[in-house]
Image 1 (cartoon, one colour):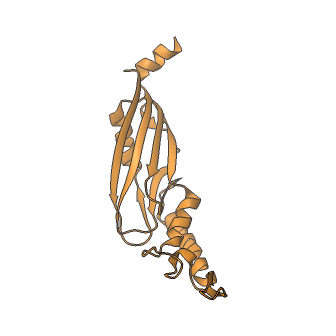
Image 2: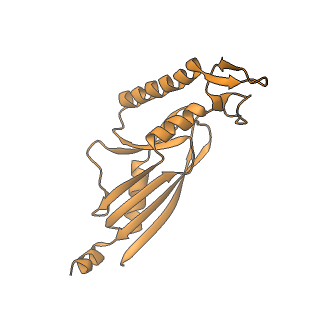
Image 3: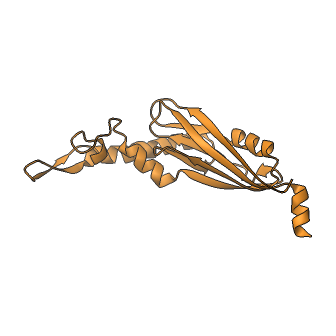
Length: 171
């Protein structure tokens, strides 16, 4: 077989607000179907308000994440931003600047979603060994949408080679 590259897109339909989706089994399915025994799997979101984490998929922990995300969102809503008026004076306005109809043309009012997803990251690169993702006992690939209620896409690229090619490379 030799060196291989396999590409796949994954469509995820999300619910309103913040949402988590464990995609580990789907990614494993793609890896197994690729024929790659040793290599890497690159997963990335093509959306600016989504993130990927490697984490334990435990409900209480996901609730802790949600609590933290809501806290970050409330900080922006509470502290607000400085708005420059047409006469060049400034005033403090509630909410993030991106969410302000006078400052931004974005209708979704989703500044917190952009900020939180950037802090967590939109991509992961995982090792493949023996035809499987190399994950710890409690590690899962979790997709998070901070601005839900939409169709989301993840791109997946799998690079590597099969066992036969590995042996030939070692000789």
